[in-house]
Image (cartoon, rainbow, N blue to C red):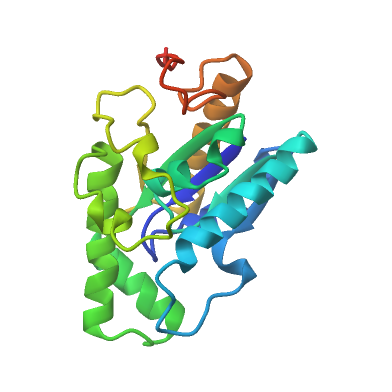
Length: 219
């Protein structure tokens, strides 16, 4: 299955994914941008195409009986719209968030003053949209849909409401928490998703994209 940590830059998702790697046997851990990021201006379809790339990598791991824990900016709706997403036997997405002041401080410390205030504002704005999207698929879907890669299949979920049992993107807020505390939350989430998958309770288990296939309701 694909376990995805999402969110805007500076939340801690990549650090957390590698911090929990040893607690999740049978899981490969990767970071979305490790394949390289093009120089700005980034092509408009790049993230969509790379999302599909990582879904296909997850399918390769799936064939070997291995789960993929992936950190990166792609939100739940983007994962579900990737052309090959229905071939995955399980998908779970968690939003890693942090207060704006901490995000700004982390980005400044991590990237040595690379970002100006306008860019930092953009990171925080992207974080705010991620929060809305995690709560409700109807909240400004055009942010990711407009001008996207034509191969994306957005109508798999754009008709869903927040009450749909398949729309699950829990939030782990790292504000004011130690790395160990946040890692414990991520590890617990991942273990719970894998157990739900094994027991047939995963909301985005095999068949989730089939309108005639009722999604299991979480216990």
